[in-house]
Length: 101
Image: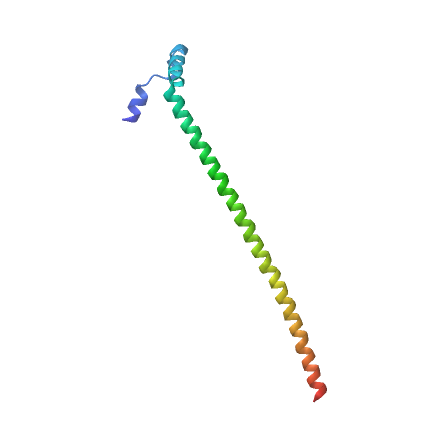
């Protein structure tokens, strides 16, 4: 049982400074620990670089999408202008029809 194991352990305040220093020195020294620490550092660096690449790619994708959106919006402006010109030409056609009839 995890709770029983935790309660059986001595409290940190009950350990002497010498005992905790000895345990820390044992954990902080030695080639296996350095090897593990280097593996962790390398993994963290690879993860950081991967995240950086993903964010850069996302930014590039957002810029491209924005450019496509701008093109579509400017195209809508052209169609609005064309609709206005079409309306003016229809009015002119109606005036000319009335003049000829």
